[in-house]
Length: 172
Image (cartoon, rainbow, N blue to C red; front, side):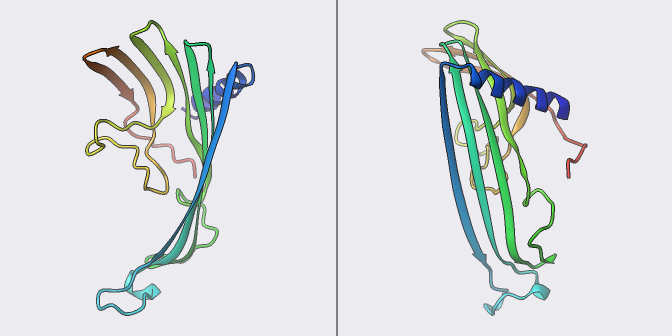
C-alpha cells in the first residue's frame, strides 16, 4: 500500500506540474498544553499530567486540469516538545506525533456532470462529523485510503466510500 501511496503522490505532483491551475495552501498551529493534576497543583511527570507544546505545519498543493480532473497533495509535519506524564521528556521521539508524512494525495475525475470518482488518500467528514470526521483539531488528522464514488443531484448527494480498514504495517 505504501507503493500505491507513493505512486499516487508522484502522479499528483506530475499532474500539478502540467496543470492549468495550481494553488498552494498552508498553515502552522502551535498549542501549549499545561494540565494540572487532580488537586490543582503543578503538573509533574510522576502524576500522569502533561506540560508540553505541540506544533503542526501543513502544506498543500491543489490542482485542476480543465473541469474534469483535479487533485490534492498535502504534507503534514508534527512535533511535540516538553513533558508528557506517561513518557517524560520527548523532544525528538519518532512517533505519530513527531513526523513528516503525506496527509492527503488524491485525484478526482468528473465522469459526467453528476458523477465523480476520487482515488487515493483523503480526509472525509460526513454531515456534522459525529460518526465519520477528519478530526481537524487533532495533531494528526484522520485520512482514509480508497475510492469514493459520488452521485450529485439537485435533491442531494449520494456517495459510496470504500476504504482500507486497518493499517497493520506501521511506518515508524
